[in-house]
Length: 154
Image 1 (spheres, one colour):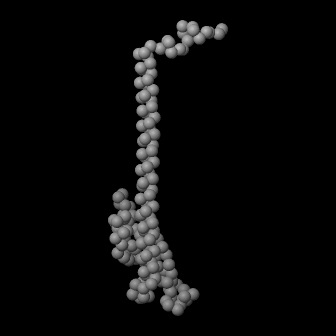
Image 2 (image 1 turned 45 degrees about the vertical axis):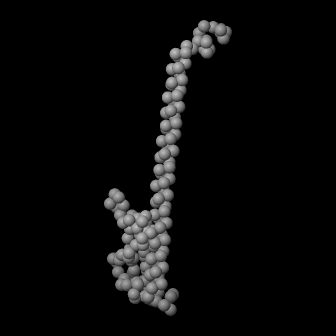
Image 3 (image 1 turned 180 degrees about the vertical axis):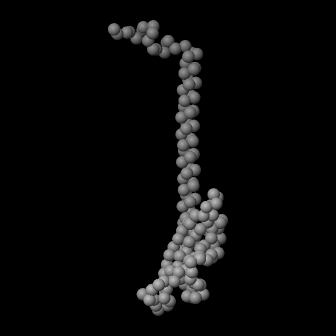
């Protein structure tokens, strides 16, 4: 059976009272507010995550630059003066002011080990390490190079 549009139980604007319409508008406005709030919260979290990622990336870049700079200084220095004794315990070098700006607890560790080869040489490893807020140490960058006495390269 087909109903005509003018039937009393059909849905038409004439069947809604102004009071009922105000209630629907309030409900629609509330739902829109909830949707906008959820979108704002999601966008805010995304921006915070992006900022954390960017800061971490900047710290890692600065640590790599510092490690490369320290390693270059060690390789350019005199064999006995800068390289010091070889051993298992790393020694610390002072960190630059730029590194300490981004990583206040950073330190530069250098480990020089003697190579067991016919040509006298040393393996140099420079690491940038810092203590995080949770108390754990994090290695931000590690670079390795090999140095042979002048004229003794393999």
